[in-house]
Image 1 (cartoon, rainbow, N blue to C red):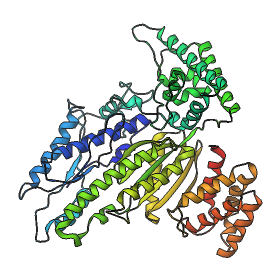
Image 2 (image 1 turned 120 degrees about the horizontal axis):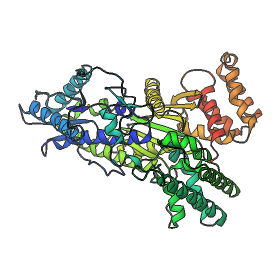
Image 3 (image 1 turned 135 degrees about the horizontal axis):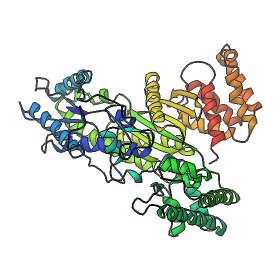
Image 4 (image 1 turned 60 degrees about the vertical axis):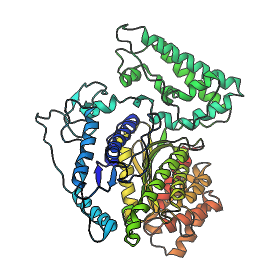
Length: 562
């Protein structure tokens, strides 16, 4: 049994969405090296799966289980570890990175209790092995730590680094990885519902179509302006990267351009000359008149969309993470005896199917998300704010569907973190991972939702996945959000609950229900919304009024109009 470094930890070392994509891809490549080093017929987990394309990478589990002939287990484990190092060597031929990649393995000899006994002992030994660390000390003094990974020496001004960044060799590998520039940015994901609605509506609206065409002409003028500078080192900015899998396709070249356009160009503020110079490392500010035209056309596109009764773009999106509950325990079924190995193969196929179904669910046109990693028992995705809770529910259902035959009781816990496009992506991913751990401490399947405004965290709500009535908690949250849309009156409900929390906490359960219902109806929340608020109170972690759930609902109602 072998494992490489946790995918979750590596994904946390990301400052932009392309870093997430590359981290996932690199970890899958290293895990694939483990799998390919196992001779035919000896692989147990994962039994199926292959590395996907650069545009649609498959999530490979970082844990591999194999059965070797007697006295050959140690040799096989060493060859698997060496295969990982050889794969990494193609990226780091000079060996500049110390102590990476790390492969931990255990080899368990056969016993009287057969495969099932070996499995249990391997699980125990690998858990102990994970607590042991071998440290490789860098031979040179560290002058700056890599700002991307938080490890290894970094150098300012390194190739592909942003201003103010120190990049290590690992950081430079991530930034130079093929295909990374095609992964959508936070703006591209956040603006996806806006751009998708324009593509659909512009086919019958000449005015809206003209607004898109004007924006494209401004973009071409900016591109020509940047090319007219130093002929030996022409400056450039990124235009592509907005083509999410679920975005509507268009035969019209103008609308197809909008489909693939990097989402920030639809925002008038992006066209500021000074910001463009700093954000893209340009040698000088672009032409002010060209930028002014771009700003005006982006604003006109928004006005044209409003005339078609299309909602404006949101500056928020969400990180959605999911992790299977007690999967290690679920796989340790000693009562199956020698049949356990065959059953493990069935589960491996089901987990592979789960990852594929989860990807399809998140990236569907009704959700417009982008999966970063889907390994079957864990998932990380970026989703537009308006569709995040629906995508999380669809992904949960996909996992349950895939495991129905082999692990019908299997569940996943979920964390959803809403954050602003200008907020550090690294902080949002770290918050989601921490929130998932917190949710799993209290309930399995657990649920956690955090709102991170530009000024910091606004609210965190943890809950069971299902309410006592059997419905999904997110279903009730969506009902509450829908009933709170419509103005300041309903927004005051959450603020009032937050203000009066201490007094409300003194009420017994029956009086609290009546008071919550009274306040909800008084503040313009529908009866369905009031009932949803009561259900959220029953399912939320901790006793007392569901203040955090109400604050989350208030945020979603105010910021999302889709």
